[in-house]
Amino acid sequence: MQTALTLYHYWRSSCSWRVRWVLALKGVPYESIPVNLLQGEQKAEAYLAVNPSGQVPTLKVGERCLSESMAIIEWLEETYPYEPILPKDPWDRALVREMALMVVAGIQPVQNLKVGRFYSEDQKQREAWNKHFIEEGFQALEKKLAAYPGPFAFGSQLTLADIALVPQVYNALRVGVEMRRFPRIEAIYSHCIKTDECEKAAPHRQPGAQP
Ligand SMILES: N[C@@H](CCC(=O)N[C@@H](CS)C(=O)NCC(=O)O)C(=O)O
Image (cartoon, rainbow, N blue to C red):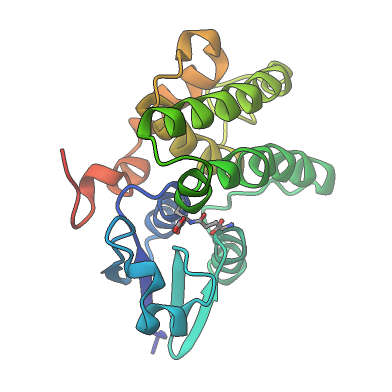
């Protein structure tokens, strides 16, 4: 019998989307528990017991909890090795991880809700901050991606690089990043968003989603 999986997540969280996408790709069923970040549910005592960082996502596997989207995704990849999201060759795997980390470690952390709120009370200023760091990160990534053919970030196969990038583009669009400046990234987004698993994991398909 398979151990039950529970995902704590928020509909608009890019880190949650990454994990939902991999779960969808590998066809792994899970119970969904929404954590409303705008209402501060991530800081509630009950949730901090699940994840002391007060962030989503967290995957509960039986009675064990795992946070950090990259750790969760790598665990899923090793536990359900079909539909792989990392190439076989070690150098290629490192390149894919490099692209993913440019987003996951380089861009996303500085536009977290808690960072933005510490920076400014003003929504417009927070959006300008996010836009600045997304554009800076995308400029570098666009140059990296130029070395690889499409339609995905690393060629003809979906990889972890796409899984990190697409939810970040969704955030970029929300703060008015002009995606025509980043044609390769825009093309990857347009291609991936049409795939069933990416769409199924997308924000608008999640419980609590707002228009
Ligand atoms: N490195 C973590 C980052 C998690 C993270 O930043 N989650 C955001 C949503 S995408 C969050 O829960 N923010 C809550 C807050 O800022 O209060 C991961 O990849 O899982």
